[in-house]
Amino acid sequence: MRDRHAPAGLARFLAAAGAIAVLVGLLQYPAAAAALPDFGTEPVQDTSSPSGSAISDVRVGANEGFDRFVIEFDAAVGAYFVSYVDQITEDGSGAVVPIEGAALVQVSLNGIPNEPLAPQETIEAGLTGLVEVVGAGAGFEATVSYGLGTAQAAGFRVFTLPEPSRLVVDIAHPGVVPTATNTADPTGSETAAEPSPTATTGPQATPAEASGASDSSNNWRIPLIVGLVVFAIVTAILGWRMRRPNQSRG
Image (cartoon, rainbow, N blue to C red; front, side, top):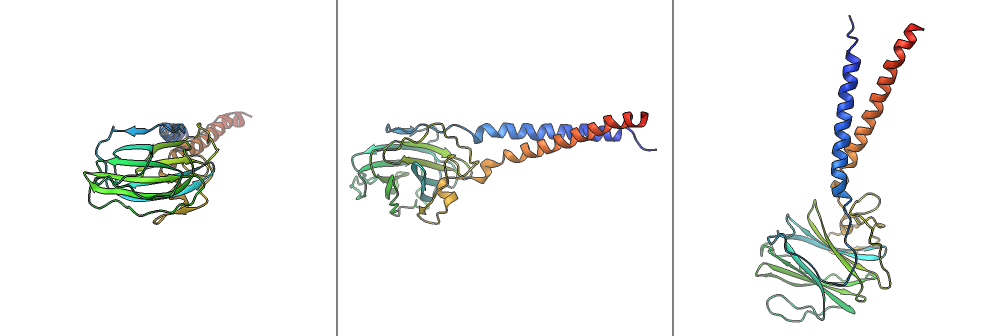
């Protein structure tokens, strides 16, 4: 004899699974869609994580309205300080580092292991806002620095991204004030919710990498979509169950 309660039990199970999947997706969404900071010219500092990890790569990318400088870490980002300066100086010696650009931004990181040595190659970016990137020291008292030569003293913003851990510095194009309502949600074209990069330079750079994009940040969509599909299936099953008694009575 067929168990009349089996379809109802299956429907309840699917409904619970769908609700859980939707909940997981919604819980992950706020982290993916966190608001980015505004562009500005004041120094930006974060000392909340004094110990960082080794730097595995640095790269640049061109975007609509701004250019992006990305530092990738093996694990934690660590403390950092980003500011416009009169000249780029080398850690330890204090020697002036030659660099192209009408205005200069120095990016300093603390708590970085001396081994392996962080990349210090010069990147001739030649972009609209970001002209050149130079290494300004690594291996001195766990400090690593980079100099950014820019076309003018335009606004910049600084933030971090996970998986992999990255420090991102966006330099606004001359005469452009990029919107401050961008989000870190990578849906669309890239992490900053702007059009994807059109050119990248630097070691092993790709458009997605230079943009700071991370496919893992898009994982919130998967459980949400699964949950909605399951919800649709449950709705169809319950609707069919409700129609059957009416049909049998007719």
